[in-house]
Image (cartoon, rainbow, N blue to C red; front, side, top):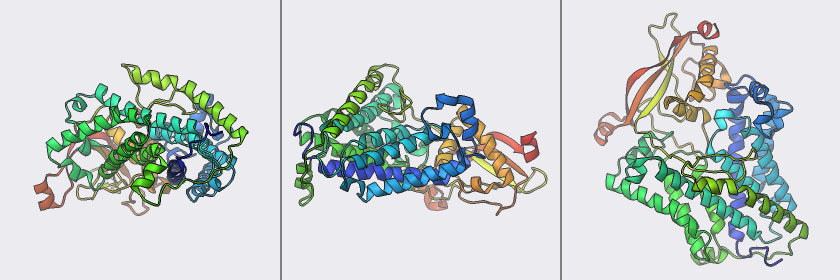
Length: 477
């Protein structure tokens, strides 16, 4: 089956399998740490209530037959163990069906989580991870050469991801067309990291060069992935480098890291060997089992058919961003920041132990989102702080966030430990506040001079009140 196996892409498979599994590992750790307070039986958006409301429309999930917080823990730990086994290379050392089953299990378990995750799992990189994990199931093991059709499907995934993101920018906001997007983006992105302040203060002409380079990378380079080597490898490396620049400048969960991993699908062993002597040596492969060829070709055919919808979406003037066209989250549409926020607003949540809401207010600090103006923005990616991202959307005025935010205030008034564990700390040391409130602040980065004089990363001022002081009795009444 020489036509079937891509002899010369062992490095690509090595990076794809271990890299995708590493991201699954991070994702399942987040499930263990965040799912129950956000979506559990006493979560902000309880899964049992969601399933009772939507029924089969939730999509495939093991939780449809029975939900419990204990089952979530089992799903999380099984996912962690399976992902870790691939990272160290255990399934890959066996026959092709072993990594296939492991990756399909990872895909199925995480699909179960995403399909009940509601707004807390409504991100494009959830579908991206699911699609990547499903494809990785058919890369085979070290015993056989990686199937060429699966590698092509990975190239097609990277193409949709990058080209779709480029089109949504050009179509979506004038600041991408006049190259001024980065005048705002580093300051208003969901969760800045320690370097974002410095990126924001780069000279404006350089910001325009960055945007132009982004357009070249996303609108032209993806086509080169399908050309002969070494052009395809160079295209993959360009994507890796530009995504690395985004890793340095912000916290976008695992979106950029996973894109870098996927772009390595284009790397040929001989190109890697020339760049890194001693690396990229081809492994000896045995014959590919007929059953494996049949399975891969059937899966390839199904994914080719499913690709009609994202291909049509790319050509549509009404392009959808981060859309799934089926309940299995396969062959989706991707993209990010089709529009750029010009001003940054933050919701500041406060509580007080005072019997009247007239004073003694203390601010709750979140793990990732801006709060105190002197606090250094943290580096959290590729980990995903789902509550913090929800707070960013809430500040944008997203009505989808209001239901869980009311539940969050109630949990804070209860002094709920699981909910407080999602925050940076409990300002009341286990005591219950009597009142909580939420105020809206405008944030901007400090200037070089302000940073030097005050040590502040941010300057902020109040612009209004989102929720007036409420007590537990008034919320429940």
